[in-house]
Image (cartoon, helix red, strand yellow):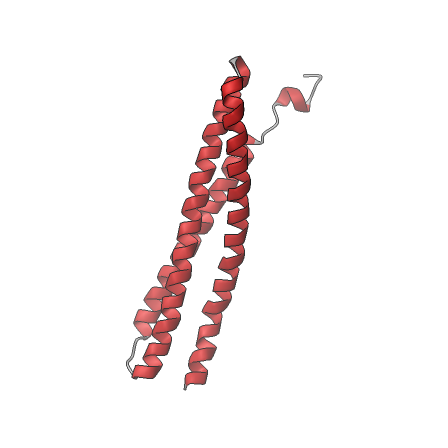
Length: 144
């Protein structure tokens, strides 16, 4: 029966691997955004006029991105912990001989909900990043 439990635990482990890759991506993005934030903070003190206003907009967007990435990372780490708990419940059920299927299912559903929330936050962060990267129409079409 323990072999069957190991087979049941494989699917959640694959989800853990996927979350690990997403966390690596988010960590890399956070690092780049933090570097950009430092650059903008340096430019903030040396700018004036329209350039200063643009830098303020970029700083606000960068701050928003940092917050969203942080929340996404937290949601995905919590998801990973809940997946680990679901796998543990499966093994406890087998070892103790107690029916914990509903508990395992509930814990796994919470993990998936947290993963989905983390992905929504990641999507939102990429939207904020894209919004800031818009090239003004006068730069795209010099004839206009």
